[in-house]
Image (cartoon, rainbow, N blue to C red; front, side):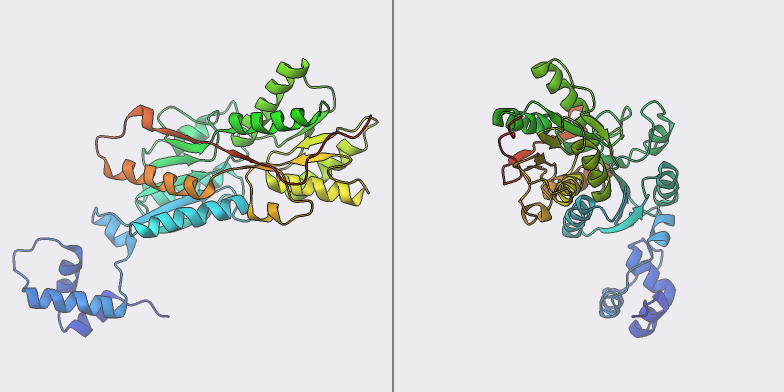
Length: 348
């Protein structure tokens, strides 16, 4: 469908393009526009489905009603669900989304931020997911957060800079629920996958280490395996863990994608889940209830996360005096979902 222009609206309404511009912008004019003319222009614009170009609105200093969403990777099921939730909340308030895919690259995230915020194409920005960023190097985040109209989403608390609003899940609470469940079943040799990130997944790994220290005096050698947080990353890491002379009786994955990769590796090695090894994930993606065995996991309230992320950003955009510091950071509580992928440890 060909986009309609201001010229098309003017032709249908029988007025000049400048009249259309004045009516649709709501700007005050020295020459009064009659109510009949104004109504004719609005009816023509509605009939044609015309919407002013956001760039033109930005140049005039008006809101564009566009929200930028920069995502770690669009193919990740977690972020697909998160974008859907943000989109639903935004539509309810008359906003549309502009998506940017960083492919985990901080430089790409900065380029997208500059286009969306510095050029005023978007009214605000959500930065979703941790990237390939250094825990020591903060210049990326300092620059990302230099404009107050940005909210960090699902990036943990360790990857934030002062003054950057954030929303995410309580990773420590979630991992403690997972570890309590596994330990309650009798597991002691609990392995964990290290995704090498500085945000959500790093918090989950650090909590695993703390619990192992508190309950068993530390993590035995070889029970933390590096892995990309992907199906193939979980698959490869599990094969490394399960060929050890004393393989773990349980594997804690950083998210459901990695956990499903772990279960595939066990199956291909002829090892049953949970009889040989228990597997637990994080997020509770829709597919987690349909793999076999169904995956025990931590449910992240993704719909609520997306809705509250948009609401927080909207408050920042609309409230000129800012929002209180105690309302700048929101942590939602995960829920343990017990299914079939965890059981008592095998005899050793």
